[in-house]
Image 1 (cartoon, rainbow, N blue to C red):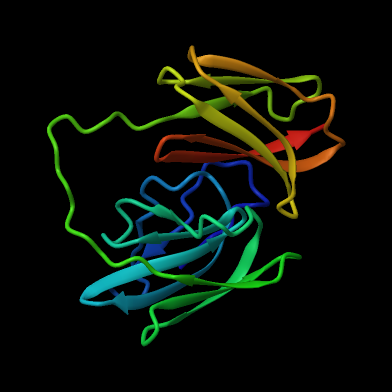
Image 2: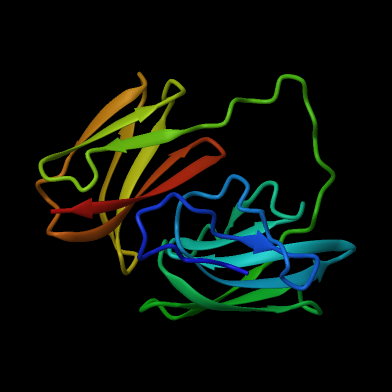
Length: 200
C-alpha cells in the first residue's frame, strides 16, 4: 500500500508491505525521497518482481522489494502522477499525470547487482528555510561536481535552472518565484534528488 502523507508534517514512510493480510506492516520506502506516493502496481519483468509507484514527482521502481528505488522515465516531465498500469507482455508502464497527459514507459530489464567495497556514499540534500521567502539555502553531504539544480512548478514546468561545480553549500534566489508549491531537483552524475519547496 502507499500513503501520501501530504496532509501531515510528519516524516512518515510512504510505502508499506504486509505478508499476513494486514495484521502487521513493514516500511519498504527504502531510499525514496519524502514525497507523496499515490499508486502502486506489482508486476513481473522477466523473472524479477517489480514494484512501480506513482508519486508527486513522477514514477519510481524497485527490483529488490523496496530496498532501493530508481527514478523512471527520464523524458517524462517532473509532475504529479495519480494512476499507473503495467502491461507485462509488452513490459510497458502506462502513466496518467496531473495536467501533462498520458505517457508510456518501457521498464528496464533487471540486472544483477554490482557490489563493490568502494561503493559511493549516498547523496543527501537539505533545504532551509522551507517555506522560503527570499533565498533558498542548500547544503549537501558531498562536494558538488557539475550539479544541476532545477525548480519545477506543481504542473511540471521548469521555472528556474542553474549549475554548481564546487562546495557543499549553494544559494538560489527565490525572488522569481510566486507564492505556491514547487519541486527542487538536483542532478549530479547518476544521482538525482527531489525535494518539496514552498514559496511564501
